[in-house]
Length: 281
Image 1 (cartoon, rainbow, N blue to C red):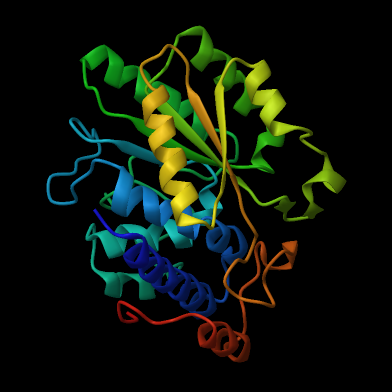
Image 2 (image 1 turned 90 degrees about the vertical axis):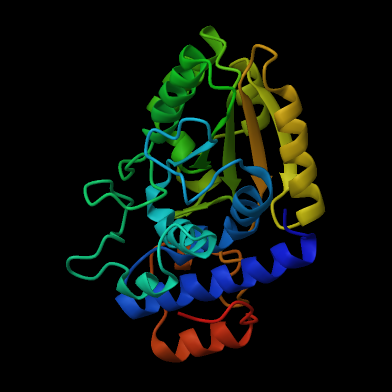
């Protein structure tokens, strides 16, 4: 289990990976990847029960993670590689022709660590509900985690899955919302507006928890609180308050870097603000 200082060091390297990956590819989605780097680092390095050496896509006997907001693949790939699911050097192939590291996670080339492909927004929560239900039917006590975006919560399928999970008492499911208030077209409240997310999820019958998605003490506490709520008849939603582009001053708090890659000069400025802790690929 990693200490908070170790988690901070890993998250800094993950952000460096994200910047270098999207710059190298000339495309990708750095903004949301940066905003979710801290709480996904904590999840994989401190919270989830998983083992890259014995992992299979069925994930029997292990916790499962599903990335619903598939465009956040840079942070997902970096964390999987840094956990040991595949060589860190493979990050340099991101979005290249023939790579396993496609713009959105895919399973067609058996990329270790990826249970569920994701691309069309709104679908991942449904998949996670099904995976969690399967674990219950199999008598597997492990949990299923899923990350959605707050902009993604404008998708109707999210709420269909939310109803289903409550109706069937899927209480081995922990969903996480990257609550950064931005989407590709601008601030969420200006585009469509999801309103009060806490009240919405509570109205659908979920246990709802909130945390600062960049404070590791708060992140670890809310994960512990979420696990404590599992098995009590209701799914759990964690609203992680975050900043799009967190870690780089010219990216932070704006939708402009939702789906745009830095040029080389911008990349160098960004990297100068992020400590290299585990070694660049």
